[in-house]
Length: 526
Figure 1 (cartoon, helix red, strand yellow):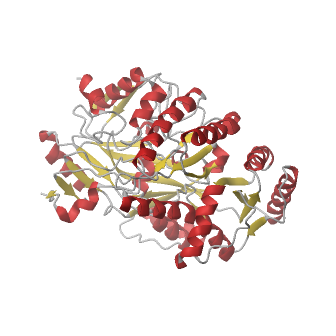
Figure 2: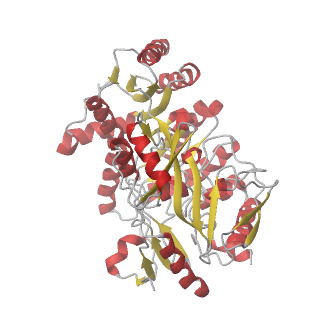
Figure 3: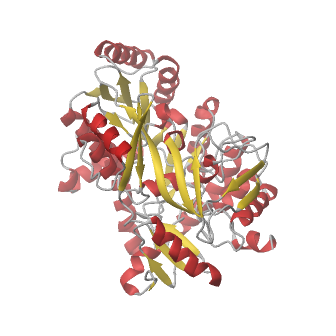
C-alpha cells in the first residue's frame, strides 16, 4: 500500500502557502500517478479523513493550507503525458504537478520526454517539433506555480486582457472523486440541462448535481463555482479551489506564438492620464495583449530597493517626475501590424498629455527581459518590505486586494480606492491588470492597528464592488482567506446552494475543508 506518512516537523512547510497562512495536518502523501491518488483516497475515505490538495503552494488565498486531516501534495506528478493535433492547434496532456516555467521551456525548446506516449502522440510531437512556435497563454506572475493549481483557481495574469483566463485554454480534465472513483471530462461533451447537471463516473456511478442559481458578474472572475444554465460540465471544476476532486490530468490548448511580441512601458505625471490612456487603448488597439499598471508608491518602492540592494541594481532608472506607469504588450502577426499599433500607442499618449519620448520600447529578447525584471520586481520588493516589518511585529502581513469591476467602472473604482485609503490613513502600493479593471491594491501595514483597519476597508470594498457588478476575486481564487467576501458577493442563500451542490459530489466534505465556505455553513447543511 502506498505510504501515507505522519506529518512530522520535517514536513511543516507543507502546512503553509504564499498567503503566509499556517495550518496543521496529521498526515501527508506525495503520489506520482493517478493510480496512487486513487489508492490513497480509497484508504482515507472510509475514515472520512479531510484531504487538502496542493502543488507548488504559490497560492495567495490559503486554499492549500490544511485545517487538519491529510495533505495530498501533487508536485511529484510532473510528467508530460501526450500531445494531439486538431484543426491547426496542439493540445498537450500533463499531470497537475508540471511547473509553469518548465512547461514554457519544454514548449519553446521542443524538448519533452515522450517515453510511454502512444503512437498518435509521438507522431503529433514529430509534427510539432517542425512546426512554427506555439505557447500556453496563461501567465501568472509566479512561474513556479503548478498547472494543477492554475486550473484550481482559474489563474490568469497579464495576458488575460487578450487571451482570457486559464479556463479558455483547458480542453479536458481527469479527476479523482472523494471515494477514489474517476471522472473524465472533455469540453463540448457533457452539458447541464438548465441548472441540473448529471455526471457519470468511470465506474458507472451517476451523480446528479443541483447547480447554484446566482448570476456571475460580467467582469474578470475567480470567485466561487462557475455556474450558468446549460453550462459545459468541465467549467464547474475549473476554479473550484480544490473542493470537488483531485485533478490528475489536464489537457491544455497551445496557441500559435505571435510573430512580433513587443513591450512598451509608458510613463505619466498624473494617474488620471493613465486611466484615460487605458480606456483609449482598449478601444483602439486590438493588438494589445496586456495592460499593466504601477502607481507612484510601487515605483517609489522600486527606487528605494535599487538604491539599497545590489540584487536590484540592474533596474533601469525611473525619472523623478514619474508618478505612474502602464506597460502594454503588443502581439502582432507581421511587422507592419506591430508598427501601426506602436504608432497608434504614441498618438494616444500625446492625446492624454504624455509623450512618446517618455517610453521604454522592448523589441529584443534582452530588452524584454529587462522590462520583465522591472515588472516582477514590484511584488517581490513589496513582499521584502513586509517581511522586514513582520520581524518587528509578527501580526503584520500584506493585505492584497484581487477585485475587478466592469469596464465602465474603472475610474469610479480607482476613486473608491484612493478616497478610502486616504480616509483610513493606510500605506499602499497598487499594481495590476488595469486592462481588465483588476488592480491589486496592496495595503502595507506598519503595525497591528493598520492591519485591522485594512481588513475593515477590504470588507467595505467587497460590498461596494459587488454593487458595481464586480468580483471579490478576479484571479487568485477564494480559498480560506476570502470566503467572507464571497458571502458578501453572493449572499447566504447562494453560499448554501454551493454547499448543497458540493455535498452531492462530496457527502462528507472531504476535499478542501475550509475553502469557499466557513465551517458553520457546512454544518448547517447537515
